[in-house]
Every structure is written in C-alpha cells, then in structure tokens.
Image 1: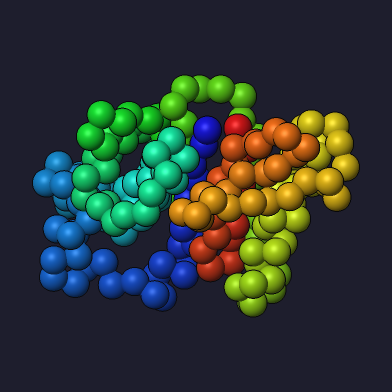
Image 2: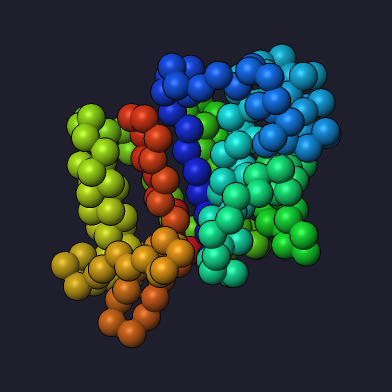
Length: 187
C-alpha cells in the first residue's frame, strides 16, 4: 500500500496564507511548529510537513477505510529527506522530494518496490487533469503487469480510496494533484 501527496509551490504561494494566526496551531504539533520556526525556509517546511501528513493519511485510509480530518494527530519526524509519520498506533515511512516547482511525499509501511511518476499538466481544467493523471496511471500499471491499459479500471471505495482493478486483482495506488502538477504511486 502507498500514499502520496504533491504540492505545487507556485499554487501554494498564490492560494495559501500559512502565516495567519492559528494556522500552524491547527495543523501541526508543538514539535512540528518548532521545526517550521527553526527552518531556513519556513514556507517549504510548512508544505513539506503538510504533504507528509496527507501522504500518510492516504496510506492509513487504505488500511482503515474512513474519512476524517485530524492533521495535527499525524505527527511527523524528519531526518533529511526521509521521515516517519505516526498516528495513534499507525507508523509509516515517508520519502520527500523538494524541487523549485513542487514538493512530493510518498508514504509506505515498508520500503518495497514501488512505481511512481510526476506529471506537469498542460490543461487548466481540473477534470482534465484528473483524467490525464488516471490515464498515465493506467499506462504505468499496464506496463508493470504486462497487460493492456484498456482492461484496467480505476475504482474508488465509498471513502474515495482508489485502486486499479485488473481482473479479480486490486492494485493499491495513490493519486494526487495540486496546481500544475500531479503524481501517482503504484504498490
């Protein structure tokens, strides 16, 4: 199983006001807030922590299908580009990549073979972005499982957690998009 999240840095600059009163307190633990305040780039640290929490949440909801909003309870611990996120008795490992254009985090329970890719969208339409992302995901699954993408189907459960259906098999995947970027991960 895998969870991922991507943050388009330009979109986050335009659309967020992370410095407003109580923003950090609503989303981050005291230790995480200290991490933000002590960071040389507070903006990037805020969005790195957020993407780690989102990736871990997506992984958690694959194991425990549900919907809830408790970002502060997903506690991040960082060591360079690797991290750990803990929520109650759940623990996962998160790898994060930070570029000048985006931040992407990928969460997993162990360090298995995983396929993932990042896309830069050409279309402004959100529905179009989602369709492109799913098409590229299915192409990658087809290549990995040596089959035709036309026989694969992205299916979401009642909590919105996606899988790719391949005959009787369900393949764990995670999809994310923000601004001009999208990403998928296949476990």
